[in-house]
Image (cartoon, rainbow, N blue to C red; front, side, top):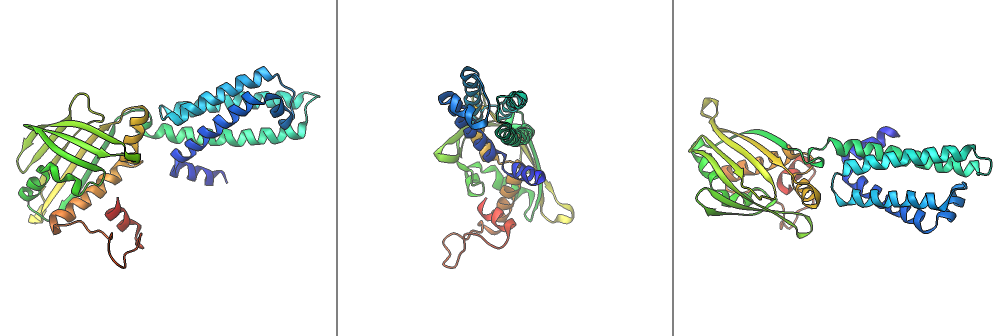
Length: 303
């Protein structure tokens, strides 16, 4: 059972963190509003003032988790608070005036929540953008076109939204400088300015974001002849440094939990666009389905 819970946490830690945040606020409000009733419910005799202090701690932890800022740290704070709750229940279990049956049930419930807090905190701490640390991405793909064609196609940055669905627009603002706008959830946008730091026609393009960018990023694309004159090997290396707070959560949403997967999908769409002139889609087809029978195909055309 624990392995099953761990797999669910690993697959969607954000959703569980949201649940734990609201749970913490709900429990904290109950401790603040009705400490005596809560004491009777869990079978202990406790000072209302102590439970209200615990309530303030719970509300603060819940708000911290939902804020999206250092979520892993707030979850770790919940684990520490859970340990204090378990110690309080352990003392109550030995007290003669306590209802040991109710205390045992409350202890089991708190222990279960503690396990969820610990698992979720571990998963969130493993994610680079949970701590505001750089995310490095490196991908390689062979395209059935010459390096000259691939370079020329890639160098036209304004057409990037054609194969990168998370981009809204790219426009030139000056010699070697471009303004990028990415689409975020709930109508939010992420914007930044970048400049080309090196441009070797048909060989390499390097760029870096400018000061004040919502997303600090840099990278390079290399165009190398494939062996046997079978097209071009395109090598992409990128670095993102997502900000903290609500904007960081939006950037994390844009990057996804696996940035390399998104870059892979973008490159596959680029490959199809340059080789065939269009990106395959199923929207608008009379017999089209919302999903195909292939998860890989859906990731490719709908990413």
